[in-house]
Amino acid sequence: MRFAKRLLKNFDLLRVICAVLIGFAFALILLLFISKDPMNAIETFVLGPFKSRRRFFNIIELMIPLVFTSLGMCMMLSVGKYNLIVEGGFMFSGAIVAWLASSVFSPEMPAVVSPTLLIVVGALVGALCGVVPALLDVKWRANVVVITIMLNYILANASTFVLRYWMRDTTVTYLGSQKIAKSAKLHSIIAGTSMHTGVFIAFIAVLFTWWFINKTTKGYEVRLTGSNIKFAHYVGINTTAAMILAQAMGGSLAGIGGAVEILGKYDRFLWVNQTGYGFTGLMIAVLVNYRPELTPLVAFLFAYLQIGANIVGTTTDVPTEFVLVFQSVIILLVAASLFMSSLKKRLAIKVSMAEAEG
Image (cartoon, rainbow, N blue to C red):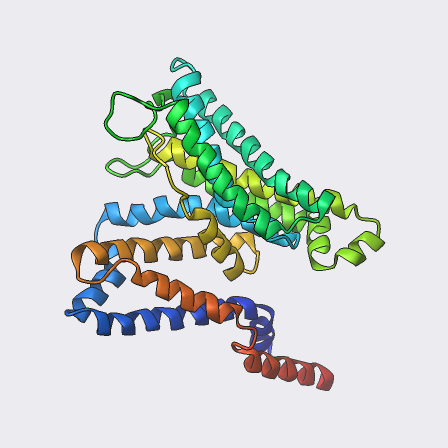
């Protein structure tokens, strides 16, 4: 009976695990039909990311920005707002931080002070990006989803503007910024890889977000506003302030992610298109049911799938895009309210009957 209670309590997590397993099985079956050498393709996809140290740490490197964007979306969704600005905020914060690191900040600045200040700037830029659609929603009841989709394009083009006219390096043949000062870079922690100290910042962000949402009064106000705004207003919570705070903090987390990604992984700012990290972060946040403590696990899964797909796409006859089918199956199953609903009802009945008898 204790097992049934625990299963019922963590049923949302069980649904996600089952959806992932079904999606994974579907992907493997798909490889049987689209590859001329399916067994090699399956082995490459499943085991390829673990066959070398460089590939494994590529998963961790890709996981870092996904953790930040998914945390930002968890914060947004906790207050009941599908604010998608984490995509644009991530990119624009990265552009501003790269501009400061390559063209404004002195290379002689201390190696700890410079990246710390730049990450704070990224947080402020991201928070500003998150506040704009929040204010438009509060003041004029603007549709947050539509507004943020449009703002993402504006921020992407603003980032390209900053790159072209503020920090472009005219000595190279491609569109890239001047080199980021070495004193502004996050330190590498494993020789021979691109692993950097941003991984520690990401896990600190996970702990902070979990603590804020679950252990603070403001976090409680955010969650209550998201679950029942009328009741929250009735008991005296300033729901307007809660909505603005959550969306500002969500944007701030995305901004920190953009800063960490630029300072940890790149020597120059090179982004001319949307990164896609924000929309992947939305998928992760939905999969973990807005629980920040689970974001590293699911972010690792998505990073593993992407690296595996990249390896398959470059070493076999399978296109990289096949992983999108896998991700789509997972999202469809998790979003389907009837998926495993009968099992949940049976568990609930079993637990209720046992408690009544006891």
